[in-house]
Image 1 (cartoon, one colour):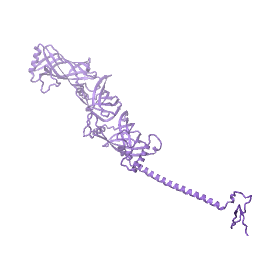
Image 2: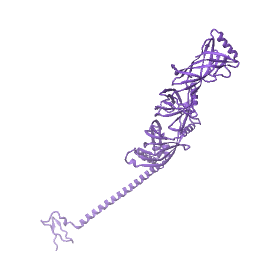
Image 3: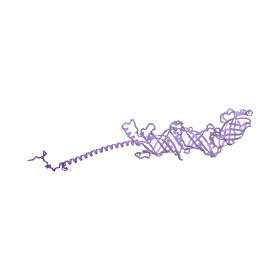
Length: 598
């Protein structure tokens, strides 16, 4: 028989399980954990393990997804960088120089110094820039699609970050189109700013100033022929050869990631063609037009020669056409030149003063000295001086010791107006006596020799040789002795057979001339030739002199040759001979008159 006991009115289930002691007053209200069932502990542990596994799976998923995305990104960036690098590596020096590099100028050239070997230290100013977007294909284009625009945008971003490059190069060798060496240049390292989408004008270029050493060829004939040929073609065609060119990112001497971007080019050869623009004051180049002679470009403004300490010194000023644009300025230090007379007789050395170009003409001042004349060359200088005093131009050649085998032909103009060297020519105690069918003239010749203005030198006129045509009345305006046909009213010709010994003394100078000298020479029994067919004119003239109340007016046209010694002009030869010094005038002659020429 079973007994049901209820607690708090609830029946106690007496199942098959193990009997449980009923609670008592000592039974705790909250059971002790050790009293929890073992099944509850196992469930909790399994729950924790499952949670850790879920978290691990999530972390692994995130890791692999991130790794995949990073790999894709790295590969994408690598491919993108490779595409940019491949584009940059395909650039040739010719493409960079001809399509990307832009140089405006030079706007100023200053020659700083010149070496004994002909080298020239020069400071050059201009503006330079590199269209990096143009040569890499990164410039904007309205025809680009979305992907092309995105690709170019990233490339432009990289170029902007790079900003500029530094360029260093070995010596630059310049040759002509015929492979003749023209010059070698040593160019310093320089920075070149990178530009994207440059405007149509050149406002994007940045100023640059660099000192360049130029070693031109020592064969001046090569330079001369090069310029002449270029002028005929209308363009300078140059070949340049550079052994090595190193390009580095960033500015000169800087540090940072930019300087890890480096590239090097070797054996860089390129052809540069520079079109010669129309130059003011010069003919249009090209069309096989020859280069104009130097005489067309330079004008002698003043010339003087002076005797200083037994040496003949020279001073001159000239103007040269400046064909360069207004934005171009050139300054040069003193330059030495040698002036020679044909065929090849050096007569003077000159040194220009330092000068800067001015527009429209360059003013050039020069000083120098007369060189000792080589043996046998006095006749060359005599011809030059005779033509100069007759206001005739003389051919000269100009060379410089800085460049060998280079001479430029030029014209040394005669003074204008023609100087009146012989003045106040008189013949005192003039006597004419017959000898057979001929006549002889005697007397003392006086003359005033006035050198052209600017010629302040000493000289000694040792001999004279007059050649005179005598007219009845005023002479014609001519300096030619015995012209053919004979001029009207000419009736006699006077010319000594030998040089007349003369005496010379300094005289007071005139305002319009240089040094002046009084010269006299005694003339005895000099032939007076009555011109063929003019015997009647001669008789009429003599009758006027003898029987006329006022005598007769005689006109004289002629030239005089003189022999002079010039102190300060070293020469191994005899005196200089100046031929063809002209004079003309008229004088009234009576029975006791002096034969006079003004």
